[in-house]
Structure formats: C-alpha cells, structure tokens
Image (cartoon, rainbow, N blue to C red; front, side, top):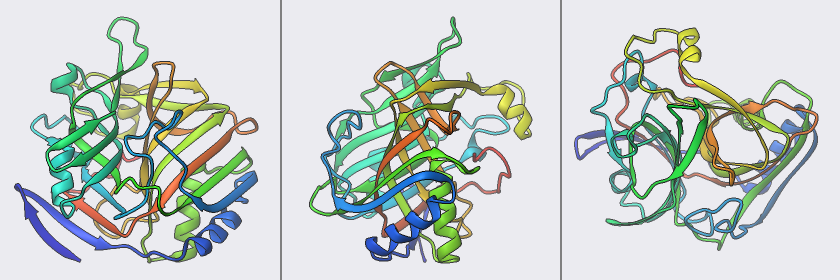
Length: 317
C-alpha cells in the first residue's frame, strides 16, 4: 500500500486481487444461485455499452481498470460540509493520470444544479478534456417527486464511488444475469457477499453497469441539506425521499468484496431511466418478477481519496 498527496487530497492505493475471469464466473454462478432462481454468469467480449439503455460515455469497460472511493458520508452527516467539492478530472490525475471512462455514484454538484442531488457520473476524460454524459437526480421542490436532468460539468460534492477504465471493448467482461430473487440479498449485495465468502481477506473490486430489466426497484434521492443534525439511521431515512420505479432502470457504480481497513463504501450504485427519474439503488421490491443484466470489469487497483478523519457508522447503505 502506498500513500500520496496530490492537490491537497490525501490518497491511499491498494493492489486488488485479480483472479481469472473464468474462475470468478464460476464462483459467482454458484453464489448467486443461493439468492436467485435463474442465474447465468459468463465471460464475454465487451458489448458496445455506449448504446441505450446503458449509454456510457465510452463503448467498453476494458483497459487500466480501477475503482476509487472519494470522501464519504461523513462529509454529509450530521451536517453537510459544503466546502467538499471535487472534479472528476482531478480524481483521474490522482489515479495515475488516468485517461478514459469514469462512471459511478456520488453526491451531485449542488452549487451548479442549485439543489442537493444524486450524481450518476458518466464521463470520458483525457487530461483537461472531458466529455460529460452525466445526470443528477433531485427532489422537485413543488411536487416532492424525484426527477433527473443532464449536466455538463464533471464537478461533484461530498462523496463518490467510481469505476475507471480506458473505455475500450478489446477485452473480456463479466456478464451477470439473474432473475426471480429467492433470497434476502439484492443483486449487488449477492455478488459482493459471494466474493467475500469465497475469497476472504483478498480484496476484489468490480465496476460497471447493470440493468433492472423487469420488476421494480427502490431508490432514494437526498432532500435539501438538513439544517438540523442527522445523528442516526432513523433520522437519515426520515430525511431521504424514497421512490419505487418500474424497470428498465440503468445503474452505474462499483463494489468491493469487503472493506480492507480504509473506511470505504463497499457498494454504491446510482440509477437513471429514459423516463426522467432516478436515484440511489437500494434493492428490488418485486422479487418474483425482477430480472437483472449487468456488465462488469475486474479492477486492478483501488484508490481511497480524501478519507474522513473519523469513521461514521451509518449512512453507507
């Protein structure tokens, strides 16, 4: 593990465990069958994910694959630290002068949007040249309904969890299909728990995109910043706005098999639709009807950037 400080943001990096994708597919096939009636995990040539419904800023997930955790819920709770503002292009520079795709979940750039919001990060970066395809979800002040909008900035606030790659298709990815949930774990938690159970203390990272093809998903969108302290999970859930959306719902983000002792968010995905709604993915609410299809790259390196000075024991779900 190495420590660096770039642009006044402390950073720790960790080499991740990278088993062969064929081995990983077999492990996930067996593990997901404990939570889903139908499972198919395959190693395939990366499809063109720039096409709908994924609509990524680059066509693929391959090449120089990394995951990064920036900031954290500590900077939101109990009261928001509004000085915590970042740019994805700067995060790319910290992550080995990364060039290519950056997708994931974070807090949106509230000074630009004019409201607290959820970020669905989706950009292609080369130095200071940034192609932004990102969206944010916010609560409509009048209707209290969640709504999404496109943004043209790579800024974000407070926290973010991202998958980085060259954005190429010249490589293999995991395709993970699962339907009719029979167990307690949602799609992403089932993947993560399977990896942790099988590989133990060896830390693995996956990132990319998945689609809730059928069924409904529970999402949240943050309300406007609270003016009273939020000190526990109950207060947090009362502040968040929860919604249930019918598929198709597209999600972007990453997961780690477990926390390697760096106070990380081990699972974080944000969603959008072609119907102008989206937010933070929690789980499906129609287990018998749900069907998932996901595409993931296996990360080689993990970066922990601007970790909070103290550990917050709630708010990472």
